[in-house]
Image (cartoon, rainbow, N blue to C red; front, side):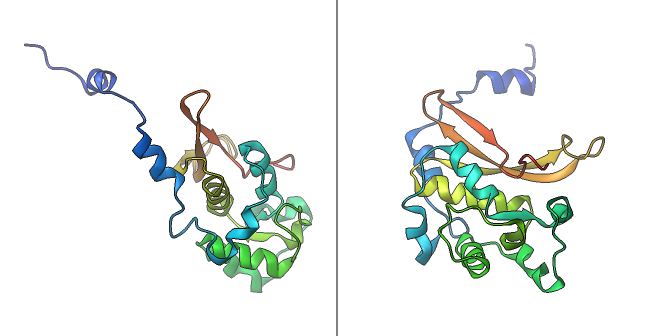
Length: 174
């Protein structure tokens, strides 16, 4: 009797994404819920690429702020420790009270890291009924030859019947 390898076993397992799984990833979590600020998401488009552009206008990666001509004040360091989307939105509105669809000047954006871009996008997608989740790993494509810890969004593309990665952190400046 031949022993099957792990790869062989994985190929034989069903990879069906069930309605229950999609429903789970469609619901906001404690971290991705906009809470009392949920009405801010009502007028957003339901297109993942459009939502990614909106997020890029709301968050500034704190480690590359200088590429945008911004020197972050020391009192803004705590923004990178915000974990809940509702609190992120509150901070964004403190800097600039316009609707979230309005792109902010870089110095008026939330000073965050990859997790902030991802959490906001996941929250927006879920608010639009699109299953989405955070994926964590190591990226070698933005600081080669090093692999750095990184999180990005994965959303369910109904037409293609598959999960699609979307890295909101990288805009034209990156």
